[in-house]
Length: 483
Image (cartoon, rainbow, N blue to C red; front, side, top):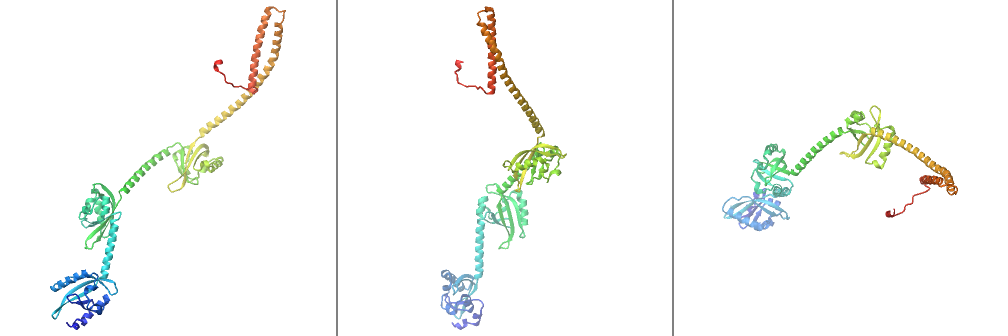
């Protein structure tokens, strides 16, 4: 064979890399484009086996034999992909097309190569990205599915579907997702799917059926897109909101109960006999139970809301209140009795109970409950006056009692003197020998009554001494049997 014919101008100027080989795969020639692509010049390639520069020689050898067999029969060869090491060691991907060329009585193989490295890298990155997103989808906390235009499942992240709804791929792939939706939610679901067309996002709260027949609540987001096959599909992301829905329902029930409770206590407050108010940190009124305030003090909400509660205090009670607030006994709560000014400028006595608290906005406030105690204060004043009167009378009685004791002491001494004389003369007469028995008997009666009077006078004297503390009781233990 004449190599000159092979090394034609057309061969060298051809824009794609070309190699000529014999049927055993020995490289006979290559053009400039081959050197530009691979870094191998003619001298590097001619005489080498084509399989020596291929990444996987065994696989390439098999491919070469296949190429040879196909071309030898005169059949056309579909493009093949191979990997080739450039002279600098870099790896490139090539699409090769082969043709059987006959020159004279010999057959040669012509390979035309096209660099496909960038495309393969893109495919690799895409595959890597797909794998990454597959891992994300498989390990996500939300259900992720792709459905076709007939709402049939083409993909599900199986681990989540199984964990949340109990389904495996075999249960869902190729089947319509509409069967999972609660019948009452089906119309809403179809409307949401309609909104999801044209790349718009549709969102809906739906109930989906668990494999065990129970329904759970989900928030579904869907968006339409065009698949690789040019067909419209939709990606569906569903988040299980069952527990959140239960919590929301519970909160709503609690709020309803709280509202009912607030209404109940509002009615109680508005109809209470005590005045109830809420003050801000500057003692200004924020709330009053108007009906009671108007009944007791004559004020309406318009008169007091935003005004200082201190304006209602009697001037003499301001200092008392200041000391009470500064005292440790009223840091958070306390009670005080003061006078409040009525709208007609008269004053009434009230008992004020206050307790500080922090509202929902973290503002310090005070709850104040005020009870009118005018009647009680009047009763206390009357009782005080009565006690003072009784105390005065008691002092007078004590003075009279003291005078009585002095009288008893004096009279006993005064009485003992004549009785001593009576007793002495009676004893003399009884001892006289000149008297008869009749007079002596009379004298005995006189002596007996005199002794009785002496005894009574001694008792009065002992009482006087006992009252004055000159004598005291002496306690001793005795057997009651001896008494």
